[in-house]
Length: 251
Image (cartoon, rainbow, N blue to C red):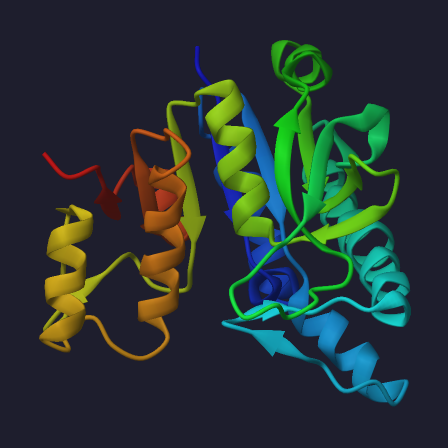
């Protein structure tokens, strides 16, 4: 049975009610589960407390040397450990990993137009499926922090959405589920069950998709570029009952 890749963002990681309910929902799913998580909220908080001004380019964090230490500490240490512990306490078997472990996810420095130096912000280039597959076969949930090993030997902070896409592109899961706090994309309170990228952009233009849902939709759409055939935006309830908004490639 093909696995489900679950992408969990930093806001959900901070929500202990979400973390308490997550294991119970995952236990209802027949598929193997793989989780990729973010943690940007806590990274930003620690940066500011240490007097470092967070810098972004088009929503992507620019990672200097000092910030890389914070990213590694928060993602691989604090957040990953918190999530794994909650899964185990909830009766599941889980293991915390990051892209550096066994060279599982390789990356190169992100290059952007205009010549902005992104520092230690990377993009994934390779995923070793053979590292992940034994866990999935044994019904152990790999919980992946998006800290990756550079082709040049450096450590890179990689956007969790990009890691989820790269992992999904490599293992070809049944679906990628993009977690949010509502049941999916709504139109006047009613769930939109499916949409293509063209339809999504039209709904954004018509302001049916608005506010914080816009980056969620666009980020989910980016996963289709990795060869993922089905991406779902939903919440825990939707994950449990198989509902949500499914994004599929254009015809």
